[in-house]
Length: 309
Image (cartoon, rainbow, N blue to C red):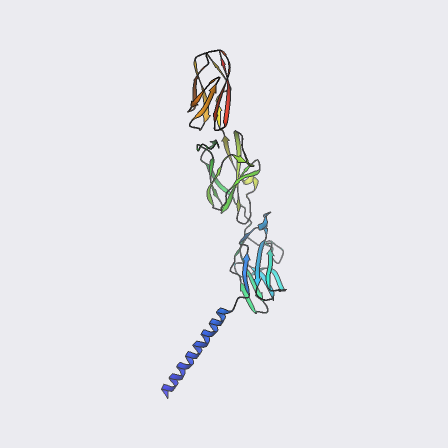
């Protein structure tokens, strides 16, 4: 008798196990009522950009009546975006402006989307996290590798590199005269950006310039203009130290040349040649008169009048 009970119990266990396995496998094959979700990861209601709202897109496998709400990190309802509204099979779109049900702006933080489907008798919390962020990035520090540069393509001080530290991950923006002239493509909290003397698709003329460093974060927040960090640069190519030189006929004279080029061309009267260094030493023409001294490097020139007595 005991043996029969044991055998019966074993058979019952096997049947129950098989049934549970079959149910589990059937559940695995059951397709989710919602698929193809696409949810904004970060947004800022304060930004004047496409990220000022959080977009929520879902695909319904079957028509249903939905309740869709935004919950905070503790699972509490913050905003009801759809309350008992019928939706057809296919795509359904929602937008959250960052306001609570009471009409106030929700605090910065992480939020989740909760969806209840009436016909399916199912409540889902989407795995996508929405970060509401209204804090503009701050530029904490900026250093530059040089102040004077010459973007002439000779691989000698062709650019200025700015190394920066930000208060949060963001893209760095460079401004000149209030207009953006450069930006980084990624969002590191610290890194570097180079300026090649190009503004508004044109190479700048020689001179002193003041650039402003700001940032744009993932939510679309931008450093306010009055909080940008100012940096000063000097753009030069090749410059003679004086515009007028007085020399004695047939005698040597010299003039300073400001350039980062290793070699440059010079021309005085009918004579010409190549030189290097910060001091150009030449012999004045034998005949008194007024001559033009021209120095050039990669298409950039400067001139000075040489008066020979």
